[in-house]
Structure formats: structure tokens, C-alpha cells
Image (tube, rainbow, N blue to C red; front, side):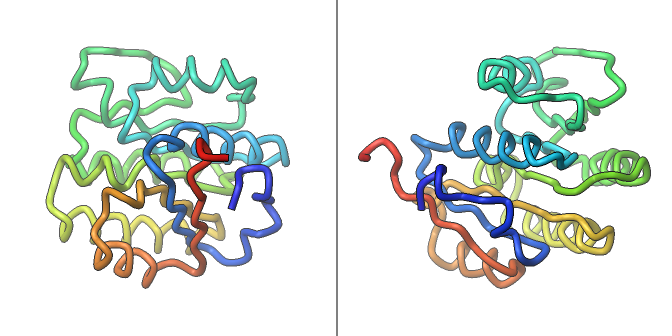
Length: 184
């Protein structure tokens, strides 16, 4: 699938796995976010890959409206980047599951959260073992699903073993496999 072929109407279900080649990862993550926001949806961007400063610059570069986005950033505090914004939660550690859960609850309780985008499951695995990270992502997916929102789990396919992809697919309603966009 190419990014141009992706449509918000394809999100028939609650939990989605988005498999991407690592070379195209940011393009797909940001492109999907743009399509969701451009369709009037509000969401949470949960970044385990980029600090908020980098993410903000990337989204601005792609003309992505950030007024309808909340951000959970588990990278910035580790790099001593602090930003006091109402729509940004900077968590001390990627494995501070209680703090991350509180941040999700805070944003979900505000209402109007149509989607949560996890950028990226593969990067998240750098911070912990598959079982604890997988269980946490599964519990987040259930929480988001209960709220009636869509949960998109982005992962770098070539870096994941087949059994990990199968486990992720087992909690998802649908998966999208983006071909290597650089070869087009």
C-alpha cells in the first residue's frame, strides 16, 4: 500500500497495526497523522521515537495542524527538553507505565479523542522486554477501544521477528503493510 492510497474510511475497526519499512517510517507516521487531522479528527500522538521538539518541527514542516493533537512524549525528559504546554505530557521514562496511563487518561477524559497513534512500537522495544511492552500496549489498546477511539500501532516491519508481528496482529482488527515507498 502507498500512503496516497490510505484513506481514513479504511479504519473499519478499533485497533490497527501499521507495518512500515524503517526508511519510510516518519513519512508514513506523519502522513497518516496529516490525513487523520485533515479529516477533522482529534487525536493523541504517543511518541517513543522522537522528542517533542523534533516531532513539532516535523509536523510543522508537513503543514500538519497541531491544535487538535495531544502529545505524549517519553523521550524529551531523558534529553532534558522541557516544554510546558497544555497539550503535551512529557514522561520521565518510556517504562513509567503508570505515568503514561495517567497522561492517556487525562487526554481521553477531555473528550473528542478520535484516534491514538503510537509512534513506534519497534522503538518502544528498545526500552523494555516484549512481554511488558506488549502487555502495556494491549492494555492501552483496550482502553482506547473502550472510549470508542481508533488505536494505530506503527511498527518497523523488517526489524520485528515474525512471531512479534503475529502477536501484534492478534490484538488488531486490521493491519496495513506499507510497501517500501523509496523504491517507487
